[in-house]
Length: 575
Image 1 (cartoon, rainbow, N blue to C red):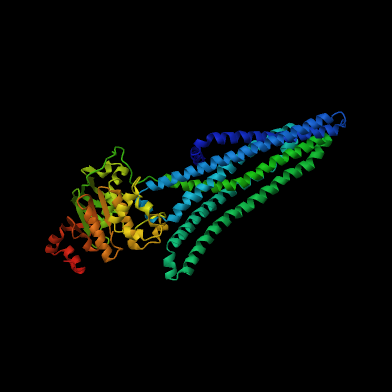
Image 2 (cartoon, rainbow, N blue to C red):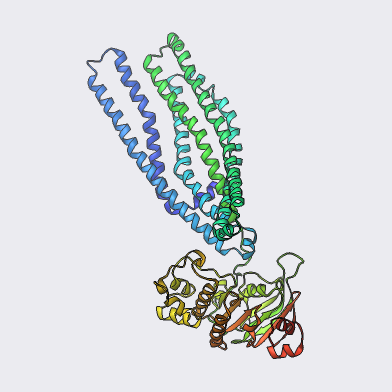
């Protein structure tokens, strides 16, 4: 119940629509309850034998019956339409809220998550709310009102017969244990459809690798297994639903049989007339139909609650990295960065960085080198505050990064990664992604600096060329140069280059080095590189080993020292 109350809070902006829909439900219920009484009166007039003198009365009652049906139809429209408008708008709102919350979660949250699973939470699980708001809950409300109203009327008509009609109700209560089992398997089904989505997303992204390594059958088997497990969970849930529905249908027919047997016997010994028996049967249909409907609706409710639980699991996760209560907005900084005795670990007691201290003055180029896994990319992530240090502090212009708002901190940064991500849009849109209201001239200038303008001009659509999902139509080097152009255009005081030239040829690398040379002194540049030719001009080179700074200095100083960096250069024939 708490989850449903919490869920309904999201429907606040459309509460007036739900109120109108609810009023329409009351009117529908009232019309349903009144119709059998009008029918009873018509039959009573016919039964009295005074048909000739009462024809006008019968016509009037018939018109009243017609009016009730017309009113019910109008109210059904308002109820159906308005409840759907409210529910789909609420679904849209919750989807956006879940997505916004996922954007706030720290990088550590995504380490063991698959994209398809998260997509299922945002799309599939929230989609179940529509059936809950627009169908299940309104039907529960109207059916409960109908059951109570009919029961009162039945006792008014004949208390003895009404009591007999209640005999099947305890048997219906026995079936109430089945929805719990259904809910368990529906939830498992939603978890498994998320797993299937995750596999499909991975496979579509890696379709080139699947084909070149001839893994189609293996991946097909994986999809079949995930799909079969999903269907298996649904079938188990529907097994209990299959028991529930016919059981309820059979139990409810017992009430009709009781009336057909007991009604005439009671009529013989009392003043119960035929019109009362007919009305009783009409009301009896109104009584049991909602009970049968409620058991069907329970299936939808359980499905929706399972989705609700999965959505709230996401919303209840607190971001590890977030603004502190006293975080300040900062304007454009000079770009000075200092690490003060910084240690960091992804897992407890296993340090990736151990007591790292260094300073990058504004406009300097600092290079980080060392074997894979020594923490170079981690330093980049700490600067961007994707993670917080386990101990120590990181400052920009003397301000602890934890004391800045995340937005203003990241406004100081541009980032070029080894694994470039481009969006499915035009080349121009991707270059301008990090910059608001960039002009065409600015986009072109950034492309020229990144040595990609000539390539773009050679395309039929030039800067309006659609590059496909993740830039699938471009080579690795082209994607990397577009990413550099994007960072150049952003013009932030700090530029993080993580293997930014790893996917380009030697000639393009020289051009990019020339482009980087144009901004040296104007921005603070942190370069992570295995290809050491890109960092010979760095103001300071920091060589890492076992999570610590092994040595630091200029290229010439470290070559003369003959340590780790000199060995790396010798391996790459750089001296």
